[in-house]
Length: 308
Length: 262
Image (cartoon, rainbow over all chains, first blue to last red; front, side, top):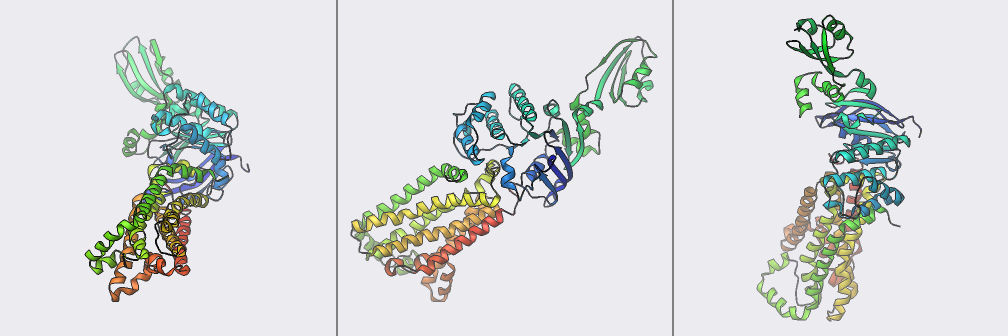
């Protein structure tokens, strides 16, 4: 590999006629990194992925994948990529086994034990025709074909959709194994919880623009937590309303409820002036933090779309 | 070993190709094997129909063996069958997977766009050629056996002409699919062109003022030269092949330059 980056995009832009797909997306994914690519439906996740795979051609800007040009070096590049489409549809009527044999042969030969190993891990029956399979089982076939040739880069579009919780855990374990083996994983999702435990960083895209790229830990630091304090005597909400980072203050008698973003210190300092009976602080919910990107920035139109 | 994508294309098209092959073979065998029995009926048919109608149907005379073969196999139903086969199979190379979503996993194979399009076309082109060659192969057996008095070289010229005609429309169908990615476009564009080409050839024979339009019609280059009576016309056949090759190459070129699956 000639580059330290597995994926590098510069001002990557795609318009479908007048309609915007993505605009000026600049993003780096380090080799060996797991990146969660998050955003609501229609934000441009799949467009970005299709640009990286050369299914779409950029209107402007450029992408470099594994140090190669997606268009010029497509053949060499796709040999090193494992791709799981967001909307899976398999060509043909064969059994899962025959279909996977085709994918293996097309990629220059894949050890069959690799396929059976993955199938066993995901509890997938290879002797059944793919067409007759449930959505979840089709998703497993899709995962096996993406992982089977141990690609340097895995591009997974909504990988856990259709999988039951047990299989989602197994999938996440596969991602961790891939990272341990030095593979890079670029996975999109519209739910943070899905990538929270495996991703090193998350990139958040909204309305075709990259709004944030952060390490998962730092996302936690600026997380929003809900706090409930039981005082001995009734308190005045005005006292807490004005504190930095404190919002949604409600007081019913001696019980104060609010949400705090960032440090708890200002709230604790003020609360300590009263006699405290009990205090509850819910663990920071990354999901809420994630959603706050949609709800608390720029306009209600965005918020309603994020909720859709 | 053949490329995996070629073998996969054949496997996916297997049923359809087999169906068309059986249909074309049955059609050819049934019409020609009962040559003698049909002879009487053919005379009736020819007497019953006005000359203009006979011209339109491409029936010159049904008394001579060559006329009979032309009227039954090579004038209307034969080309119609193999062209329908070619157009529907070619619609599967790019347009169908692009519409049903299977394209993403096919295109994710480590092949350049042009290699992908080329292999899909090569696989389907071979299958289509096999189906289009069936009348030729069967006639080699049937014509001597039922005692039709036609030189086999002339039969070969007509049979190869049918293959050339099919290549011509396969190229056009491939171009339509490579540009649009839509099955309906492939069927509409190629279907309309095939019907228009047939009409152009038929009408040009009926009225003198319209004589020139035959030069626009692939059907003229295929059957207008009357190969069953006059034998080989290499220039006309090469024109058909050239149109097929040019449109196919244009299709590969166009597919390499557009967004796929939007």
